[in-house]
Length: 287
Image (cartoon, rainbow, N blue to C red):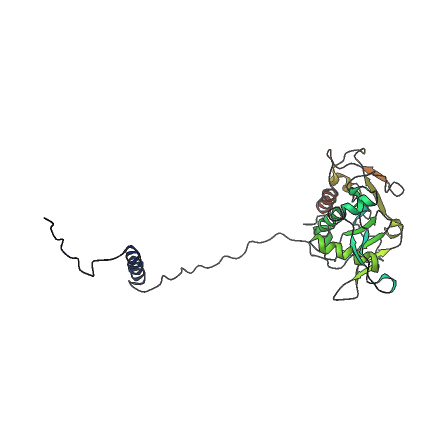
């Protein structure tokens, strides 16, 4: 004989989803219940900032051309792979509408093979890396650095120390194409030329009291700090750095006064530039 179960009241019957909803509403009520007062944040008195060491003030103006005595570091990026390539031909007078791009190994492998050239000849990224390293250095911000670029095609470029080179390679490539076609790049806020093509040779633009140095793995190994300390009080130093993937290091033999090696290991062009910048900053007390 079946026994009838007592019927549950409607209020006692509750599904699983309703139970979860009820628990959530109950938790929300508990959260908002109570004193109703928010905790106040403890007020603290900030301490004065620590005293910084005395820094060398930045000089936003480069060394004037009339100044031939101020001691400085001069870096010449030699054999730089800066070459334009006509990517597309369009209609227009004298080919004004032609589209050019900077020859580089990432985008123009097929073009380099058609021309029968080594892919290592199209490495403008090396020049880009060196410029970022040099222009960001404290010795440049202190007004003690001058930069020149001598391309593999024999074009000599002067870099204004106040120029801001684009960080991305794509924008840098577009800037170099404009420079090689227009011969100069002016500032957007003034008529000052930030990049310009100048006449060869490089010795015409160096101060008279300047030691011209080339880097070679076969030269005597020296510490860059010790080498810069051997300069006279008003003697500048000009370093020729090969901005190329591979090749001979005889690109500045007709100018050099000395040949040295700055490491027991092979270094990239950017690291070589960095070592000279750091050494000049240490010797010349630039912080």
